[in-house]
Amino acid sequence: MEFIGSLCLILVATALGGHISARLNLPAVVGELLMGILLGPALLNWVQPNNFIHFFSEIGVIILMFIAGLESDLSLLRSCLRSLLTSKQDPYKGYSNHDFTGI
Image (cartoon, rainbow, N blue to C red; front, top):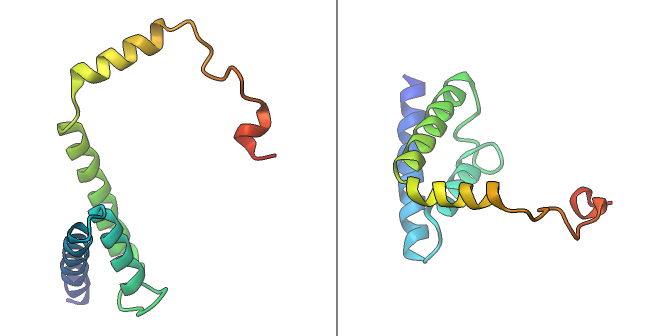
């Protein structure tokens, strides 16, 4: 029963955090992340990471990726991919190795 309570707390808190964040003209994900920090071990420690939370977070990522696929514009993706494949330019031209490695 403790797991269901944790899940309900997470869902309500992230919905509230997303709503508040959107009202402040910030992306909803910012408020959701802040709620995770607030409720997790970093601050209040009301929700501890465990297998149950990990399992549902994996399901959440899968649903997020599915929704991103639903909202994708396939014709725009095709045109970008076509221009990338037919381009003769070297995408790394002008960059040295330390630009990518931070050395």
